[in-house]
Image (cartoon, rainbow, N blue to C red; front, side, top):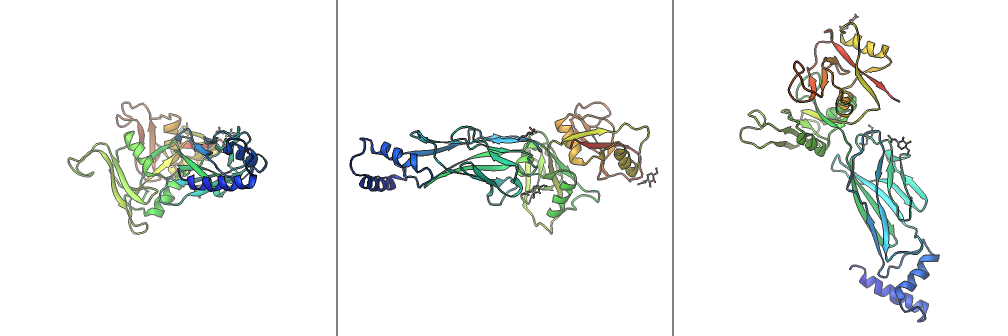
Length: 362
Ligand SMILES: *[C@@H]1O[C@H](CO)[C@@H](O)[C@H](O)[C@H]1NC(C)=O
Ligand SMILES: *[C@@H]1O[C@H](CO)[C@@H](O)[C@H](O)[C@H]1NC(C)=O
Ligand SMILES: *[C@@H]1O[C@H](CO)[C@@H](O)[C@H](O)[C@H]1NC(C)=O
């Protein structure tokens, strides 16, 4: 018990100050005397302990959604009146490597939020000891480990909650071909397709769900990996177990690979445009605009497939000039026997096909 020495000293000092006339349980007396009137003064813990608990280990929101990160603190023995504590929420982004960043700091009813979290987070404070963080409008890159820290004088306790956005990982290769992206380029193409660089945990999760992809791609932490569920010779060789193959950290500028992007639900609708004619790429873009929409991005098509069950067996143009269609229920003449988004590369833009559009709900 790390505070023993401290308690003894404090106990002694207090006893000296207060005289010898206290009740028989000196600890009890101190709480009454010091904690009631002087709530924001330095705490003198004499056997009293502060506890912090997050109850739930992980929350699984979607992009744009809200997340409630439970956290509560209490004292043992119990307090008769609430104390003023400092609550701090910080996070370690799942993108790897960085330091913890501040999310919100609160003292009593006053609080301040930081960075991109400003105006999107608040403490719930529904009951004494409630330090639950309520977040709204979650962004794709806000997965990570969130820490709830409660400071009362010299006591400082914390607990963590993982935020794991639910979403979908997709491999991406730009129009100009395989292994053309350095790290920065990889980040950019994901953003252009309404997604973000996938984290290792997100790739691992999609491997568990069956993603089998034999091209190495960047991840958010700067490593290059690829998921194999069906080992074969060109994908790591004979006799290797299924798994996520790891090339390790690669040089951010010099090395070039494909990329794994991560998307989550979208606020709006992705749909195959009913149109009497097949269209070339420029006419397809215009046809979506004429319908009060935009030609869909790759991340939006994957999100619609994953979250709204979009299933349509006609290939359609997407904003990057690729041609794809989403299948939930595999059937004859609609590609492989597994569900998935079928991809047909980047046909010449004058070729005529259907088109997928996206109509935003905002
Ligand atoms: C998120 O919470 C806000 C209030 O804080 C509410 O207005 C909004 O509808 C919620 N959004 C979702 C997607 O639940
Ligand atoms: C997360 O994404 C948003 C929107 O794309 C961006 O503004 C923000 O800087 C990103 N935050 C981090 C920590 O990368
Ligand atoms: C698509 O067809 C239109 C005519 O309908 C033409 O003006 C346009 O140049 C064509 N675009 C491409 C990329 O071939």
